[in-house]
Length: 150
Image (cartoon, rainbow, N blue to C red; front, side):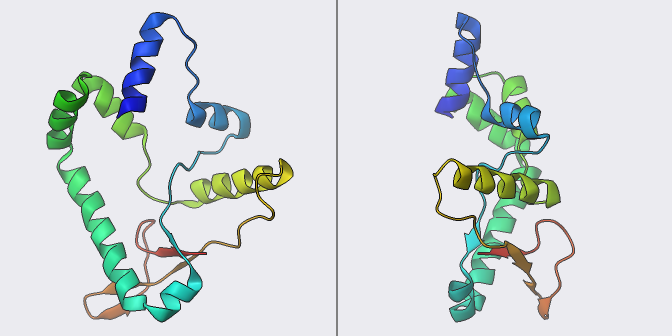
């Protein structure tokens, strides 16, 4: 909230505003990943039911947000003070899934972080697994249906 408000205020003041996601996309032609929900393999192995319960809660929250965007915009407009149009544009530019493009962008980020000495090694392969369905475990087919394991 504060970052978005600062960005809009700085644009009006004549300062140069650098958007990390825009710069990354221009430089790499890949999307930038600001956050991802990941579970270590050993945590999943020890608690698969809990992991799936949390995963389903996150998916339900995401779906609620998508279905109630107007309510979120109204609350955000009051809280932040930016016009709904600015907020709607901001929220529409966010990705709420983890598709192949985002996976490639994150992998490249890790590779650069290793080259720069920020990480000792690249992250292990991110694998997605099946999710819990109503009748047990089913294969996830959409971009948001799987849990990422590290």
